[in-house]
Amino acid sequence: MSHSVTHAAAEAVAPPHNPLSALARRVDSGLGSTVEVIAAGLVLVEICVLLAGVVSRYLFHSPLVWSDELASVLFLWLSMLGAVVALRRGEHMRMTGLVNRINPRAAALLETLALTIPLAFLALVLWPAVDYASEEMAVVSPAMEISNAWRASAIPVGLGLMAIVALLRLFRLNNLRNIGTAVLITVVVASLFWIAGPVLAPLGKLNLVIFFVVLVAACVFAGVPIAFSFALATFGYLALTTHTPMLVMVGRLDEGMSHLILLAVPLFIFLGALIEMTGMARAMIQFLASLLGHVKGGLSYVLIGAMYLVSGISGSKIADMAAIAPVLFPEMKKRGAKPGDLLALLAATGAQTETIPPSIVLITIGSVTGVSIAALFTGGLLPAVVVGACLCTVVWWRYRHDDLSKVTRYGKGEIGKYLLVALPAVALPFVIRAAVVEGVATATEVSTIGIVYSVLVGVFIHRQFDLKRLKPMLVETASLTGAIIFIVGCATAMAWGLTQSGFSQDLASAMKAMPGGAIGFMIVSTAAFVVLGSVLEGIPAIVLFGPLLFPIAKDVGVHEVHYAMVVVFAMGIGLFSPPFGVGYYGACAVSKIHPDEGLPHIGGYLLALLVGLVIVAAVPWLSIGFLK
Image (cartoon, rainbow, N blue to C red):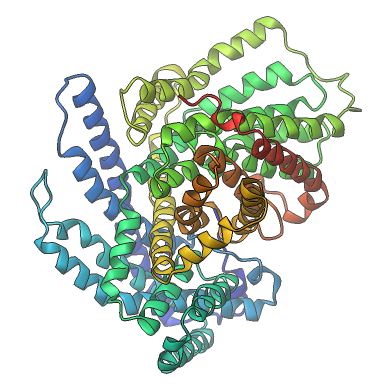
């Protein structure tokens, strides 16, 4: 997940008062609160619908034929309204390395451009979206027998609300000069592209470089949210160089956001928040600390182990870090650990645990490539252990001279007591896996069982369930879901545009012709996904390149699950590596440690991650040895 960008730079050069800003804040507050409540309610309804489907099918042997269909309709609305919430809160994935490193005036202008550019796309695509929804009116759903327009209308409604929210945020920036300059730049650039249309059309595949490399890179580095960078480049390419109707692009956007398996994303995000809120994560960490706290570097081993266990529950890296860092870091600092080393290890464990189910990246791979998600979940466990062992080696070397004479050593009785308290949390990953293996629930539905389990543990065992935190958790789930699913939709549309251009065939030919066969293909793929992971993050990179590269991997003799593990680790290393890896800055935000403090310490951990990646890539059995 990208770190959110503050508007400090914009506010630093803002005039003291602007009536438009005051009005925008009032309207935004009312509209934003309404959308947040509806989006949070949709998360709750989705949980209830899927849970009802599980209970009806497994306990009463009477499947609800409409449950999946209703869940699909509501999911598109949740995704679009969540994207509205994310835009309002500045939580769409974006790269801000350049914005954070230039002077405040220039940064304020880029912040404003980061709103006017998406606004231009929303204005251009809104009518095709309305047209698409009206076309869907004639389609009737099989189970509920309602018009598909009820579902498809989520797209124009969401895009329209995003346009309103972007306008309101513009005026909340309080600087009319920057707004005028940014609007002028956006209009001029858009006009130049439009005028150049007749010149661009005959250029053929050179347009791929112009739109999907130059334009996307310019938008991404300027701080425009990645989803809008993809979408604008795709819209420009299709509108100016092809005869494709724009409602086809909206259809591809809908297709990318409508994979029912992606419904696991909000449910596991919410489950991760529940784990932290009910005290289950804290109980698990306290047990591990009592077990290893007296060992040199023991709490660092606990951090690695806790990230492994918690990742198997939440599926969200930010949720994992937020559950662990506040519990472990104060005690680790008391024992003399340097804050920079803690930050570096936290970021490294983020990369290490990317393959542990129910990883959102693995769910995304399964949804866009057709690889079995159950196989991906099984294949991801052992590779993470190997990479974790490599990190433990670095920890052992760095802390081998620690003085632990004053550290409390827990007795067997105390350790047993902590184990008893942590047992429900430790059991949860096994409960989730058993539910899938025994056919109680699908990979999409199983998170609802985890949610019910966590609520029961929080209420009756830990006696820790704060109802006041429920709404913020649901809103946060909707926002993060919207940011993720909207980027999947935009990347799907972009991947379709690339496929239609013939790029996928050219890429397949080039990759198959790589010297070294499967080994050469793996080396090039690994290097490419490290770079892609740092620039695009895991999900957009997978949606964009997964459908193109996974069939090639199969053709050259690489098992799809093995390839998935290598790709996910490679992207994780890029994602959590400074200076571009936005996951690194997410670790900084969670740990409240300045990014510069981690730089001197992260090299050793990155080397360990690379060694682990090489081992996983060289030994396919680690990924596929336990597959049926």
